[in-house]
Length: 114
Image 1 (spheres, helix red, strand yellow):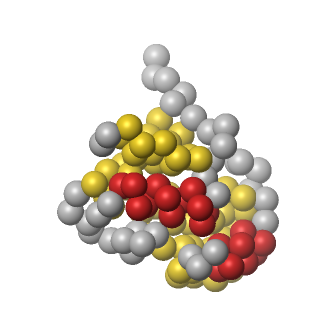
Image 2: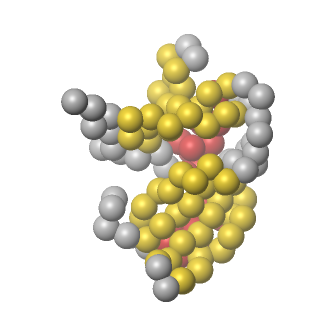
């Protein structure tokens, strides 16, 4: 049986700096134990492992589900986060994108999958 707990690795230049970004500016939980630096939404069993190494910036394909994308975008902008795609309503849903300090991009998606 595969556990419900999962992690996704994202290459970053500085794990601690990236964890601080996600905690202070995005509002996620964070933990750093040596190389194992992770961030996650409160109560989630899915964690993003901020793996230090050679960075290859781009769309990670990682999405954070929120009840109101426009409100979260406004909060992130207020916190100085680089919004790479403003809130946009599509036939398949409402979303936006933001970048971390290394240029990796993440989706904000509106939905009940919170």
